[in-house]
Amino acid sequence: MKPCSLLVAITLAASFAQAENWPNWRGPNMDGSSSEKNLPVKFSKTEGVKWATDLPSISASVPVVWGDKLFITALLREEQKLIGLCYDTKTGKELWRKVVSEGGYQWDNKSNLASPSPVTDGEHVIFLFADAVAASYDMAGNQQWKRDFKETHGAFATQWTYGSSPMLDGGKLYIQVLQRNETFEFQGFAKGTPGKDMSSYILALDPATGKDIWKHIRPTHSQVESLESFSSPVFADHAGKRVMLISGGDTLSLHDAGTGAEYARLVTWNPLGDGYNKFFRLVPSPVVGNGVAIVCAPKNSPVFGMGLDSKGKDVQPLWTSDPKVVTSDVSTPAFYEGSFYVLDSGRKTVSRVEPKTGKVLWTGETGSKSKFESSPTVADGKIYATNFWGDVYVVKAGGDAFELLSVNEMGDGTKPNGDAASCRSSIAVSNGSLFIRTQDKLYCIGK
Image (tube, rainbow, N blue to C red):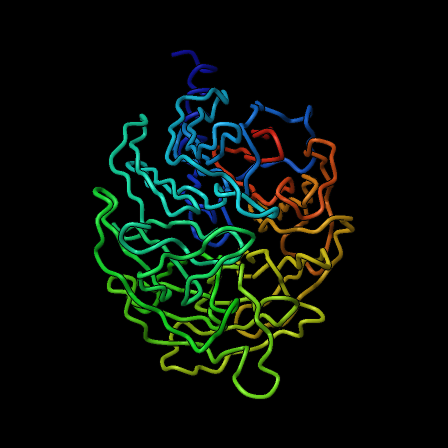
């Protein structure tokens, strides 16, 4: 082999070895971070684009990547079908699409039924939709199983459209349903199923067959909307055991991931008694870093830190943020190289927070004119976040002060303000590229 050919081969092999999958909506570490390098700072709809492809529709779901395949959910509005899609990560070519459910696509003007993100382990890719229908396929698009959870566990009883994403961990598929404990109607649509147990629960399934392994009922003292959560399960190793973290119902709980058994619960941020009138559902998922989990209470409330070695029913937080400085309404924070990064959805600020103490190392204003409801992605020393319009803000991670590196307009030119046309999908990172979902396109951006 010629020296130049050998060098190219070694370079390509090294690049492939360093590539990291993005198997679920929060990435390989379930914390919004990736070890990928050489990612771009400045890009546009024409600059730095490896490929771009039209999507059938907008959705809040995040693309997931395994090797040379990308999976994403969408809907076919006119046909009223919910679909799972597979694309080639190198070319953007659509490899296959599967209809998972039919008969509806939207229940309110904020989102649609394709909001949950898919999940994959390289053997299975599972698509779950808000109408409680899920299906699993192999990488070639062959169906492995399909289930309608309405038949066994009832329709999901959340006021706004269900948006929790399924997770794979330790050989199990996990589906979280934190919902109202009753059936009701909202904007002309029935929520829940009469005659079914409407308790909140976490369901563990066999990913090979889709059959239930166990169902853990998760009660709380919460009422009405506060029972609901659109967060997703998060998993972490601590003290020799696998921990499952569930946020919602006005608290954060720690569970044995293998059995679902709960062993610790944060004291509620919405206590009973005088002033118990804050009925707010929770959106952000928990995040783990340096043995500490953080959970963001809703609607400009504080962020709480909780040790993973906690035990008991009313654990006091390690620290509580000043919500005038650090809070999040919708966006799930990220953890990267020893720090939490909290994106304030409404004030459009980013804060760097020390895990053990909650000390705010810096806070800065992005200057966005539109709200953020996507969650930040952090890799290669950069924080990426997309606002409603499809503008991607890039902020420097680490350092002693906030530094805005660039603003990149990737949207379709419209300026939606929180309706179903707004960009809510977070950015996936893999193969040295950013995968960005906007109103009508999927972009692969890289050097």
